[in-house]
Image 1 (cartoon, rainbow, N blue to C red):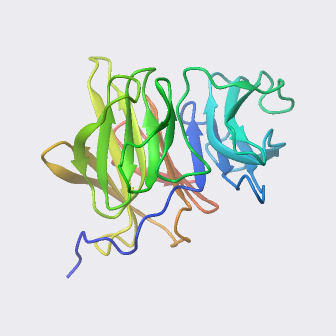
Image 2 (cartoon, rainbow, N blue to C red; image 1 turned 30 degrees about the horizontal axis):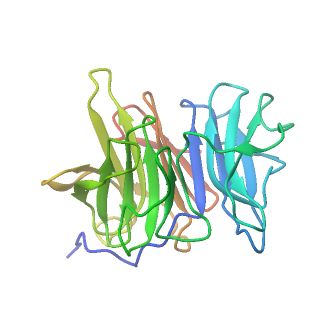
Length: 253
């Protein structure tokens, strides 16, 4: 009998995706400060093809598109100090690195810590690893903790509170609707879905399944989720799916 129990323990996301809309997105391989290996790619055709661009850093903690050609990356070198890198030409060139000011990103040197606008080393999950981090403003963000709990902050990362639970979740995405309501989604790997189960996470109500995206399994950490106001994306290894606004139907690239 299919269950919603996790198929494997979640680890920090190492395959990132960040969408601008239903056709344009960036994806990245995180790499590490010590070994490097970061990889950054861009698509303009809903993931049918991806163009690799030069990564501005040895390791990448966050990639964020701002427009059709503008984006920034938060990454680090061998010292693992977060730096911000901006591009105005879709990654063909990068401005010199600057200190991160008012940004959100997982710390690459300590899996329990995140960089927030109000704290350089916040620990939203306590002693547990932060699997994924999703922000919606300078003050509001949510973190997915190892074990499946979701916590939220509304004060820039100074304090965190329970925001739901999604056992088996491997990545997290959030968006704010026109009415100002925050919606939280997660991708789970569970026996109930032969692939990737998309759930909506609601505080005190658990995880409500909204779709089962059938696909090949990948190594832990290789699943990323991005939710925008008009679309949502999942990457799992080299697989890509794009959804409409409601996240109930998904189209493979």
